[in-house]
Image (cartoon, rainbow, N blue to C red; front, side):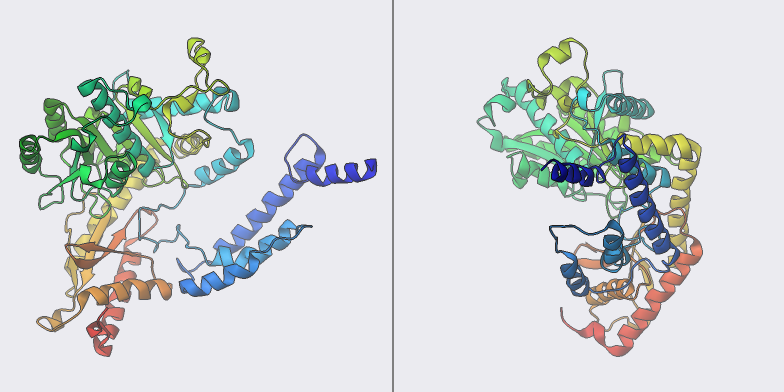
Length: 510
């Protein structure tokens, strides 16, 4: 019996990193195996996507989803997943992968992921993240100082914009209910009359504003969308008119949400003017800078963030213009006393006594309990890349977007929607000039172009809908993408478009 127990323990030892030689040897073998496999993958990657249809990949995944009692060698499993997972994955770092706000990750961030996973710190309480707690706290301080928030400010790392926007509206709702009715939502639930509460945002704000309203018990009906101007920015005039209308209807606006970088156009709302309105009306001013927040490191475009410092709360994503592996974001507040609306003391985790003794438990600032040490990714990247090169990379992408828009204007079959990109997205559609006046299904044609590029492995671009019409979108986050990549991609689009026109495919109904 003792022999069996000893053999079992020895087997277990080889699956954990520990002080013993066996654990260290196993760790080195596994990491080296992964390194070799990824190196081979990237050496052989010539396209952003292998081109397979969803159904084909689904069928390739099914056979590998079996688990044995004895287990398999890690090397064999790596070989097994090579085709169905590794080769079938999207290659985000490829120069022609430009569909979404989905960035190529910086190598220091990738390396940080290994440290994060190996140390496995849990960011809820100090005794589970002894050094990591203070790294995150200092990174938040760096961010608030960079944005020029007051000394009372604070923040916490999050999984991204969805969580951060939710937190901003949660604090806004509870702060309003406390101020208006002396009502404690955290303890007593939503007050009577909660169905009169309203949130204002632009018609092009991120969908998570409505999603958060729903999750907060207010319903999507609580979100009032405000029209945008010709540059897709929230109209100040429309905001004032909407507030007057809400007052006449005896409704209670409590939050104004501005967007610093909309998903499609990258538009930046007039944050300074909106801040004045919010201040005058007693509204919580939240800014969703998940996308545009990265401009704080830009050498040429940081001035576009003027007014960001006036926010009561801010969303910033680092897995966009900061080039961090998913997921990595932050939620910042002008006055961290407002975290009281989401804090909860558990005796085993973050007792009140810890606060009295000055022990920092970050769970007091988060809607998550167990949480990763994601701040390390940003820290290592800033330390090794440097803020100067960070700024160069960001500026390079904005320069490329401007060039792309200018180049598109010269193409007779390309119609551009935003000839002066605010950040680095370009919206356009293929619209053959020689077919003007013909009964064409342009929506179907452009959807088909996007899918054909993907399945041919020629390029990964996005499609979007603007006022009922389908457009194509380039999100130029990769600073390694060059004008030649844009030229060849647009040439491919024109070729596919010509084939569709000649084949009559665009006349088909959806």
